[in-house]
Length: 322
Ligand SMILES: [Fe+2]
Image (tube, rainbow, N blue to C red; front, side):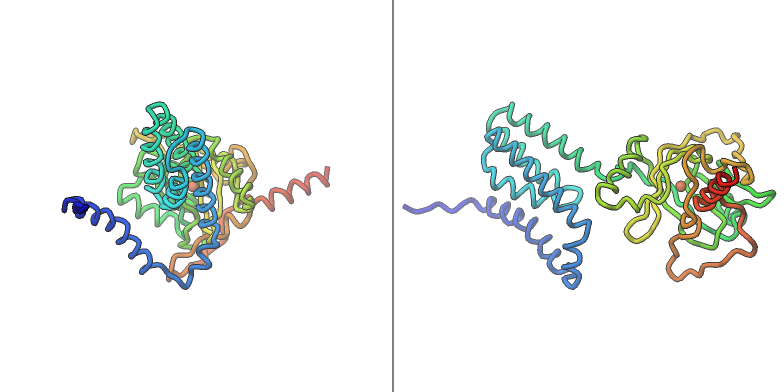
């Protein structure tokens, strides 16, 4: 019996489909830095991605077996592989799972869809659950000069700290929150931290728990606590390269241009915190250098700072004297 050849349009569609797989694979193979392969494969990020992929594959396999979804072994491999792909991997991995579930009936399909939707939420909101980028803090030797420059570009001051007439910190904004960029007097220019907003106070505690459960509790450098300026709940973490990241919730909004900036006198106690412990000395002194930019020391002495070390020693002294 003579086999009929498939229509040409099917061959074209098949070729296009194959190209979607072959071209990216070829690009990956060509552009992969094979020299760093072993280090990359054993890195914390990769191991975490593999762990999530395994969880996705095992959980969808278990549900498939319970619901009688066909092609379960193939689905398990498919979900595991695509779960490793950032952004779209979860969807590409989960859609066949839902479609095959539908072949067993509407109820099975809906159950697969609900599982897939909930799992995607779980996976997308891991770690710090940052919602959006918010602001930078830069250490500079002359806060007044930087503030004047940015004010000329349209930035406004929401709050500031001063020692007599000298500006030590300014919080400047363009969006209606309290800050897009913050200048702090210290040797610089250096990046002190960048900050992301989270949805609620629970996320602040959760990220500390996530770090602790991963054996990385020491990356929590400062907090949780509540700032004096802007009144936000915060925590500061150090990333694997030592850069400082702040997670916080949330600013008040500044819309009325007639609202005067809030002034803070650094000599007053409890200035930088509504509650929580003062920062370690490293929080003041360690910051990220900009490539090929020389760090300039301060002319005179820096304004007064309360470090955790000083706070504890003063407490201990007071206790031993009483
Ligand atoms: Fe900040």
